[in-house]
Amino acid sequence: MRRSTKRLTLILFALSAIILAGCGAATQGALGANKGAVDSPKPSTATTSTSVTSSTTTTTAAPARLLSGTLDAPLPAPAPLAPFGDPAVAGQGVWTPTGRLVDGMPAVYEAKLVPPGGTQPAGIAWMDTGLLSARLYSGSRSPGGGPYHYTAPVQPADATSLVAAFNGGFIMNVAHGGYYTEGRVIDPLVNGAASLVIYSDGSVNVGAWGSDLTMTPNVVSVRQNLVPLVSGGQPTAQAASADWQAWGATCGANSCVGPGIENQWRSGVGVTANGALVYVTGPSLDPLQLAQLLVRSGAIRGMQLDINPYWTVLVTYSPSTSGGEAAPSNGSKLLPGTVQGPQTFFESWWARDFITMSARPAP
Image (cartoon, rainbow, N blue to C red; front, side, top):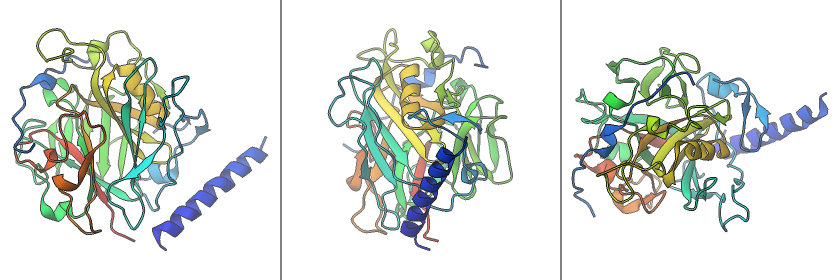
C-alpha cells in the first residue's frame, strides 16, 4: 500500500475514534553549569506516559505504534498552532512543508511562534517519524571516546536520503547523563535523566531513563542531557524553577565573556502522542518558555538540548532530485539567526554530536 493511501486511512481511523469517543459516557536537583556551551569554536571553512495533555488540552493515550517502537504509516500533517499572544503576530503557528519529499510527501513542517512573555519568534520543526529514520552522529568533543562510524562529515551515501539534521546536547562532563551508541557505553546511563533514544528501525523516542524508557535489545543509541523539561504534556517543576542557571551556563547579551543571561539561545526536542518528533530553538528563551513551546507543539515528553548562540541549529535539505545528495547548497536553516547552518554537518572539524533524520525506504 502506498504511503499516501496509508495516510488517508490513518486520518479516517482517527476521525472514527473521535466520533466513537464522543458517543461514550523534579526528581533531580541542581544540574550544574554547561561550561561546554562556551567553548571557543573552530572557524568554519564555509561562509511513556499513559495520560497526556496536548497543545489543545485534549487527553489521549500514547499510541501503540510509539510504545512498540514500530512505525508503519505516515502521520497526519500537524494542525496549526494557537499563538500565545493577543493579538497574535501575523503568520504565527502556520506550518510550512520544507525539505526533501519522502515518497512524494512532506516529512518536515516548520512554524514560528513567539513564546509567552517574549518578543522574538522561536522556530519549530515537526518531523514525521513514519517517513523519517533517526540516527545519532557522534563527535570527538561530545561525547569523545571515538572513533565512530557515524561522525561528521555526513558521507555521500547517507546524503542521498538526508532530510534534516539538528544539534545534540551538552558536552558530557556537564550533561549529567550518559551516552550509548554503536554498541558501546561511552558514559554510563543515568536513571531519571532526559533521554533521546533511537531504535534499530530508526524510530525515536524521548523521556526519562528508567521509567519512560529503558534498555532493550533494539536500542542502538541513547543521548542523555539533564532532566526532563516536559513530562505528561506539561512543563516539569524544574522547567518552571527560578533556578534557571541549573539548565546550563549561558553567554551574555553580546558575548560569552561576563555574566550570562536567562533569556538566551536554547534548543529542545520532544515527542508527541502520535510519535512525531518536534524540535524548538529560539534566540531569547528561558527554560520554561522552551518547555511551553514544546508543549504547544504537541510534545508529551521533552528535553533541553544544547544552548547559546554557537550551538543550536536545525537544517532541512532539498536536493533537486528525489535521490539527489543533500548538500550545503540545498540546505535551509530553521531560523536565519543561528550561527551554524547547512554546511555544519558536512564539515570534518565539527566535533559535536548531532541527530539526522533521513527518508525511510518505501515499503
